[in-house]
Length: 301
Ligand code: PPS
Image (cartoon, rainbow, N blue to C red; front, side, top):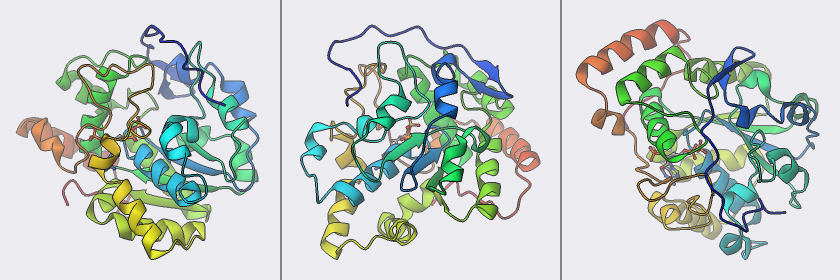
């Protein structure tokens, strides 16, 4: 089942930020709430959970290649990543909702994406003891990436200027809520839920092969050396950027004339956006919010 992209659609109106059970959301991700909460996960489902812009697509593509790269090579040239890995909570008029796409996925395992904070995950994922992969990215690069994305993703609230956007990020007034609560909430869950693999964007940049090895260990997969090499090359930023099945260029609610989903793919791009004063204020505030010494991020590699 595909997303229903046959005809070119006009951009729907940008969503407005609303407070949903204490978390910033827009109606595009809450309209289907009942079906989302009643979603029936299967024991072999794999949930890829992230705060937006933390490396979801990168890890989704790696998993898709690990599971289906050898058995269904045709899918690499015919099915975009957002149809292979449905986005659980999305519901945009005239597109098939994420829950329906996931229900109808013919693959086993099913790979499913969410940006939900841990408390919003449908209970069947926990009951079925599903494997979950959480990807986290340092706050400074994450907010920069999110700022650019909100210019191109026409269903997101208007981003406004950079300094007001940064302020809102620090206040947690973003779609999918506070970055600080998100990364901490999932980190805490990892202490009690053993089937959660928590990984970092910066580690992926530093050594993609090593992180793929760790993923395989978690998933119980043992790809051949040749296969692993193919995957590591295929998921390099430049290769994904020119791959129309991985770069979102066919997704209807994004503006591609001025922007690119695969934007920079770097650690440290925040230095091109933060002023010295913004960086100092951010760091001060960060220290107050990030009190768990066991959860550490790198802002450079
Ligand atoms: S989304 O919309 O939340 O699903 O976006 P997400 O995929 O989580 O994050 C997009 C950012 O990840 C970068 N990206 C990569 N970086 C390095 N290597 C690879 N292969 C790769 N694939 C995606 C993408 O460029 C976005 O980051 P920025 O900093 O904006 O470039």
